[in-house]
Every structure is written in C-alpha cells, then in structure tokens.
Image 1 (spheres, rainbow, N blue to C red):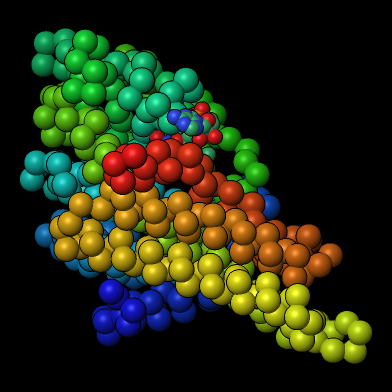
Image 2: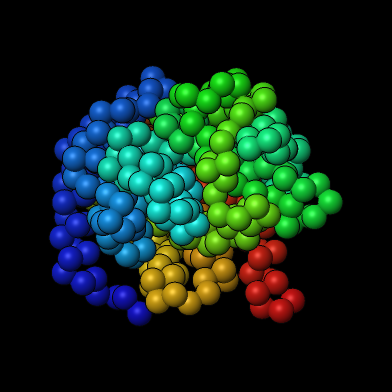
Length: 380
Ligand SMILES: Cc1cc2nc3c(=O)[nH]c(=O)nc-3n(C[C@H](O)[C@H](O)[C@H](O)COP(=O)(O)OP(=O)(O)OC[C@H]3O[C@@H](n4cnc5c(N)ncnc54)[C@H](O)[C@@H]3O)c2cc1C
C-alpha cells in the first residue's frame, strides 16, 4: 500500500501544489464566474510537462505512473474542479486510449501533440438518448470506399470546443451488439461536418466546457480508426477503469480543498468568545471531513497502484470513484456549513467545491452505475 509516496512523486506534488497556489487558486472563482476556459493555465501546465504525466516519453509524455498522475489530478482538484476536470478528460479519456490502442503512426500524429500540451483532447461516448446505457448509441460510421462516414450527436463532451482531437464512439455494425462499436479520431478543427452545437451552462465547473457536438457526414480516412473495427466497447471499459481513478483523485482534491478551508476558518472565527473549532460539533465535523478525505485518498491510491502493477482494477476504480465522489460532496457541504453565512457567498471557496463535487457522482458513470459495476465484480 502506498502510504508513503516515493521521493519523485513528492517532488512532483510540491511543484504542482506551488503552481496551483500561485497561478490557479487566485483565479479559480473568477474563471467560474466568467465561464472562461483558462487557456493560459494549460499552456503553463504544458511548460511544466504535466499534460501527459502517465504517457510514455517516446510520445512526448512525462513517463510517470498512474499514482503520479493521480497526485497531479488531486492537486488540481484541491484548487479548481473545472481545471481538474478538463485535465483528467484530456489525459485519461483523450490521450491514454491512443497510447493503449493506437498504431505508432497514430501516436506520432495524435498522441504527441496531446501529451506535449499543444492542444486539449476530448472523448465522446455519451449521446442525448444514451448515457448510463452507453452502448445503446445511435451515432454511426459507415464505410464508403476507403473512407468512414460518421453521423450522430454526442452529448456532454468535456473540452470539445477547445480540442484538437476527439475520440468518437460510433456503431460500425448494428447487428453485432457490443462488438459493433468502434472508435474514431476526429479532428474538430479540420474535419468538415463537425460542429459544437451547445456549450452547456452548469451548476458548477463552468470553466471546463461541456459540449453537445454534431457530426454530419464527417468523412474520415481509414487511419482514423483506433484499434480494430469492433473494439470500441472493450476499449471503453478499459478507458473507464483508468478514468474512474482520475475522477476519484480529483474528488479527493476537492474534499481536501474544502477540508482545509473549513479547518482554517474554524480556528479564526470566534463566537460566544471562543474559536468555533472549540465547539464539539464543529470539531467533530472537521474530524469527519478529514476521515472521509483520507479514506478517499487511500482507496484512490490503492486503485492507482493496482493499475500500475497491471492488475485488473474494475472493482477498485469503481470503489474509489464511488467513495471519493461521495466524500467530496459531503465534505464540501460540511465546509459550507462550517463557514456559516460566509460559506454561502462566492467570496469563499466552499460553495464552489460543493457545486463542483456533485458532478463527480455523475460523470464517468453515476454512483448507481458504480454500485452496479461493484456488485457484478462481487458476484452479486
Ligand atoms: C460536466 C459533465 C462532463 C461530462 N463529460 C463527458 C465526456 O467528456 N464524455 C462523455 O462521453 N460523457 C461525458 N459526460 C456524460 C456523463 O458521463 C453522463 O452524464 C453520465 O454517464 C450519466 O448519463 P446520463 O446523463 O444520460 O444519465 P442517465 O443514464 O439518463 O441516468 C439518469 C439517472 O438514472 C440512473 N440510472 C440509469 N441507469 C440505471 C441503472 N441501470 N440502475 C440504476 N440507476 C440507473 C442514473 O444513475 C441517474 O441517476 C459528462 C457529463 C457532465 C455533466
């Protein structure tokens, strides 16, 4: 169990924490209020070599492991859920599958610019009428000569309006069920027929664009198929096994940020002639916030460690995601309560953590779906 972090991981954490506190924390509320995607932050993260942490150095990545990547995601979440969400979607969903399933030519063309931070990536599975039941998709890819022609609509796609590549899931054989789904690399800036039709207004995470996209007769050469035809669903399951670890890490960061704000405030705020942390009720709340955050972190790191060892992690990643997302929402809610009326204002961070945390129980499979996955893994 990784209770103590290796030195290299601790150094990365310190570098990223320092960057987060100087460059991100001061603008975190402002970008949320303005609904502004902060390009400049991602350029700086690229300068720090952070845009491809778990990607091999051969294709522009840092060559770190999943544990290191989870630490970076946690640090980003500790100051900004929105930047954290765009970051993990870029890494786990948009970059990692190209490393896992792409040819060397695809990695050179599509993975390198992602891991070097030239632009962000997106991953498009969800559709207006298929979310939890994701394989029930309507987007199609039909072969015409030596081209694939894509048609359909994808919903809630993180980063789509900012992306230089998007991995799109589409049905290539309607009669083959799970084996009839394939993955395509779409270039949203160059491929005709691609359009971002909506950038959603949300209850939180507004500095991270969440988009509806339309694909209308998008014609792609054969080398845009990722892996083999029909591999799309198996790839999706593997991608989500890793992706859920990063949502767990991001959730741990949100919980940590909320906990720290509440603890500091409780030592300064006085009522009835004493700091509020000296009231049993507030002390116990903060102890429980700490307990939940630590537990989320342990489960997340356990899943990351197993992933790095090459073990199956479907159960561990779902468990970490389920627990950490719940912890983030509960801890953030408690932080608002500890700050009282000030906690309800946008001058203080806890309300933002609270709004951002809610998504963690929905994205990359809702909590209900995590129960379903874990239940299946337990043989229930
Ligand atoms: C901010 C944001 C970012 C996102 N980013 C991406 C992205 O980058 N790429 C992408 O492809 N998708 C993305 N999503 C989509 C996200 O993964 C889906 O919203 C999520 O999987 C749920 O699907 P749904 O919204 O269609 O809800 P539904 O599937 O319609 O679920 C509605 C409710 O029914 C419950 N439910 C459904 N089926 C079952 C069941 N079998 N048992 C018990 N309960 C069930 C759900 O748990 C939920 O409570 C994002 C969503 C948001 C909000």
